[in-house]
Amino acid sequence: MAKNHPDRGQRGLPGGAPRYSAFALAKKAMNYHQDWQRAWRDPEPKAEYDAVIIGGGGHGLATAYYLAAVHGLTNIAVIEKGWIGGGNTGRNTTIIRSNYLWDESAAIYEHSMKLWEGMSQDLNFNVMFSQRGVLTIAHSEHELREMSRRVHAIRLNGIDSEILGPAEIKKFVPTINIDQSIRYPVMGGFLQRRGGTARHDAVAWGYARAADDLGVDIIQKCEVTGLRRQGRKIIGVETSRGFIKTKKVGCVVAGHSSVVAAMAGIRLPIASRPLQALVSEPIKPILDTVIMSNAVHMYISQSDKGEMVLGAGVDKYNSYAQRGSFPVPEHMLAAAVELFPVLSRLRMLRHWGGIVDTCPDASPIISKTDIEGLYFDCGWGTGGFKATPGSGHVFADLIANDRPNKIAAPYSLDRFRSGLLIDEHGAAGVAH
Amino acid sequence: MLIITCPFCGPRDEVEFACGGEAHIARPLADNEISDADFADYLFMRDNPKGLFLERWRHSAGCRRWFNVARDTVSNEIVEIYPMGSLPLKATAKTTYKTSWRRDTAAEKAATPSRSKAGGSK
Ligand SMILES: Cc1cc2nc3c(=O)[nH]c(=O)nc-3n(C[C@H](O)[C@H](O)[C@H](O)COP(=O)(O)OP(=O)(O)OC[C@H]3O[C@@H](n4cnc5c(N)ncnc54)[C@H](O)[C@@H]3O)c2cc1C
Ligand SMILES: [Zn+2]
Image (cartoon, chains in turn yellow, blue):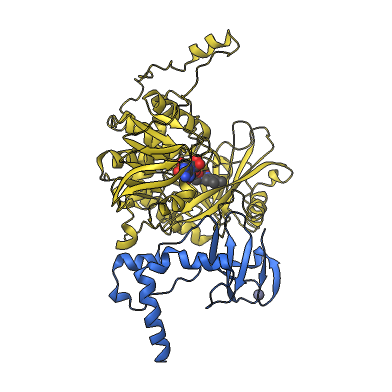
């Protein structure tokens, strides 16, 4: 593990930024919190970098942080067209788990889970990682059987996973309705106790602050508009703030992957679709875990502020409009209210959509391309928040060494030519 | 929610329809003669533009017939609805068809001539 966590628990901020601590908090309180330092700089783009990461979501920022912290590449920039974390990173329902069926998936999601477990320490930033458990419920005999097969496969990979019956579920989640006469009766479920949630914005901010401290330039409000090549080699990126020279470009733009790929004439198997979520008005604590249902495309948890956080299935047609189609959350809410009758009188507070990059096998792409120096990390679709640290870690390794490590290798774009797909559709269901 | 005008039934709510994704992907009939990479263009690679997109829809809870739609993926505006097996007539949609990378793929080239051959031999 030491290798994966080069700095666990030991790092102040080596670049000199003061550490956050309970003591610092108390001290600043004396001054009404007026003089907190900026968490990261707002630099002008330099003319040239050793590497440029396009996309300031969690994955892009994590990539930059690990490039600097693990590989010593500090003359690099993250280029974000809006503000960091304003894409899917700041729009997701933050479910974190590593209970995937296939070995390749287990490897990357569990790698991620281990990084989550040390993240607040590593980054000196409280990402509010809460291992409150993720319970996926089954509504039919068939689903239950499929689930037990999955649980055994997951356990063989050394990942915690257990089956619960309806009575045990009722004990674990008292607000749930286990009446067998409802449209989607609870017939059982499987639980990963190490799963849970984290504060999405904090993940982006924590990586940004730690990367900035190591010298990484985080450039917001700067859109990449073109990729400049010389033959089959990348030589820089065109941006709304001018040309930036670089030999290595990592594209981590989620829903916009096909748009950026087209700038280099690269084809991807990706469809960009809206995924919607909503929160209720805040209420007293009633749910201290995460519940998912693949059959009804619903997942629910309660935020620390008390809002019920609910997510739906992905919309059925491509779109770049960050709002979805109304029937999708309507369908999800109908099922949610049956499962949790207590929700029926809650009012909705906010509702939004994010554009997710879905892949035919519901697995991501972490890959070189046939253009030298151009790399893609995308296709995380509806379920990539949980993978933020692991994805950034292996993608940084790919960019630094120009070859994928063991965890990243199966996720090459080549799998769509060789047929070696990692089909997580059945395994992940709604895939969060 | 979209209101889609089914060419057979008229305007209906989006919930009555299923979306079939990118239109005009012709299967390379001589698939044993093209490379795996070229076949992947047909099987997996997808046009995914931000802007006008040509796609197939089916009136699944109605007449169950397929048709093509030219829709803007940013504004959701439907620019043209036209029959299966034909190409769009509106200038913008025509340009979208012509400029898609798919028109240059070996997979598409392997589809067109053999398709007419297959048709002729029936
Ligand atoms: C409603 C919803 C619920 C979800 N729920 C979960 C969940 O519970 N659990 C889970 O694991 N995952 C979930 N996901 C998926 C998850 O949010 C994503 O897979 C993940 O956050 C992707 O992170 P990212 O950093 O790759 O993308 P993003 O955070 O989207 O970052 C990409 C960035 O690239 C920028 N960009 C794009 N084009 C350009 C350009 N040309 N120039 C410069 N910058 C550009 C964008 O502005 C954006 O900030 C959910 C997603 C949504 C929308
Ligand atoms: Zn019809």
